[in-house]
Amino acid sequence: MYDQILVATDGSAKSRVAVQHGVDLAKAVGAKVLGVYVVNEVVVASAVRQLGADKKDIESKLQASGEKAVAEIKKMADEAGVAVETMVKSGAPANMIVDLARTEGVDLIVMGSHGESGVTKLLIGSVVQKVLYWATCPVLVVR
Amino acid sequence: MYYRKILIATDGSDSSIKSSRHGVKLAKSLGSDVLVLYVINDMAISRFIAALIRRGSTEEDLREKLKASAKKIVREVEKMGEASGVQVEPLIKEGDPASRILDTARIEGVDLILMGSHGEGGGISSKLIGSVAQKVLNWSDTPVMIVR
Image 1: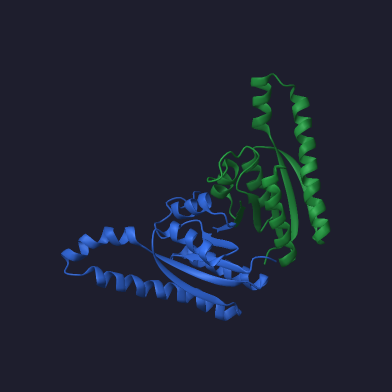
Image 2: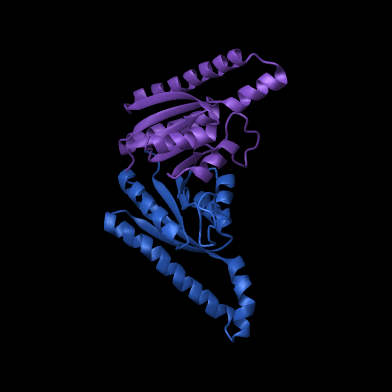
């Protein structure tokens, strides 16, 4: 059914639920999981510009939370006995997820309906919205 | 796997035939049951009704025609199920498509909603998403898979 499932995370509790769905689905169909966290370069740029943050410092902090988030995916996949590869990338999250899905030949993208900045229960986040616009493969959105 | 019941929403468009096929294939590999839902859009009925009455047709005729075409569309998905050994239960409802899809998901306790990115309303762009899919994504508590 699917050979490779891209599971996107931003490390939030909500995206952990989506990760669990992605890992369970991968296990059920015998797919490999590609766990992805994207360091949002727009967030980096605005932190530098508006808050006067140190670029290197904020980048390394986000890189570290990305490493932690993908390590969780790896742990869940390992526990489920699912093959897994993880990566932390830097860029605009939606573009990066869609590009990776294409270049890695992914069969399905799984993500949460909201990222960590999600304030409303009833709508969907901007990253997932863009992924839905641009992705050429099926997208599973988990609330 | 906990996707015991998958709701496939179809409207008979080429895109939804493709997504239905994907849904049946997924159900097959997960051992899930499928509910296939076609919603007769009552907004569309009210839009056509004036023109039809002018031509001597009745609302009843139109409803019958729409029902017949709905049956044919869900039958296509039932056939996909028969071909691959997946149990497919057909459902035809009337109303606002997104609302009926969401209601049905809740009432039937489905674990996944699967639908195409565009319906028969005609996606003008292959890069954007149809209004029914958008509403379902916005309001659903159940995971939603969009198949382009």
